Length: 114
Length: 111
Image 1 (cartoon, rainbow over the protein chains, first blue to last red):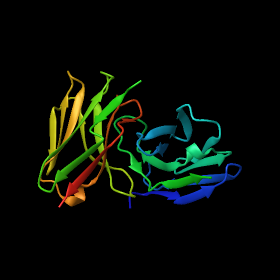
Image 2: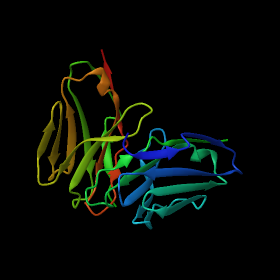
Image 3: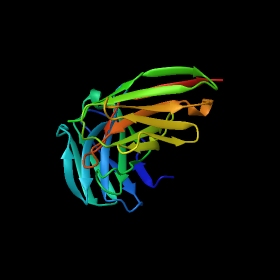
Image 4: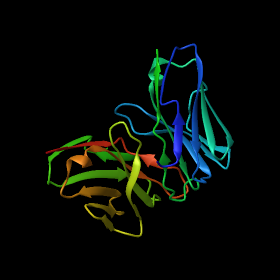
């Protein structure tokens, strides 16, 4: 157990639904990340939070809305998604943003958009 | 920004053979190069990393080499075993930027 927990592990939603992904870490890390992993694509960075403040938004469509209430929790709110948004969404944390920090990943949330 | 290219996309070897995965990067300021292993259905995990002040690093059956002049680094796995089968991702960062990942290499080790 790496200390990064994601829920739900699987999610199926329609294009008009609103859902949220949750990530929680108990490693005492200050930085948290959302990555998208699709077939045959690299791990795509979506958002970075450092000490609860968003430091990077990698040109992500507004239908994805992150929230970081504290350094231990990270959410990804989803609304009016498209079928091409179906992917594995990975949360990660590191002690500090950049600075050669090892990323600790969660198991991921497998999202299917119908 | 940084661009990381990884080859091959798929690599099949027989158990006991060696496997080599290569990555190139574009930003000469990058100085940190980790490798992550992702087994089927599991999370990526760091297996080894190297910093730009070192040319080679070994940890049991795995090693990473770095050529700063050519801007490429490689992962070497010796005496491969079936449990080495996974997707391997290389990455690069300047130390002050978030990691940029390669597209991954699926390694298949046949018994």
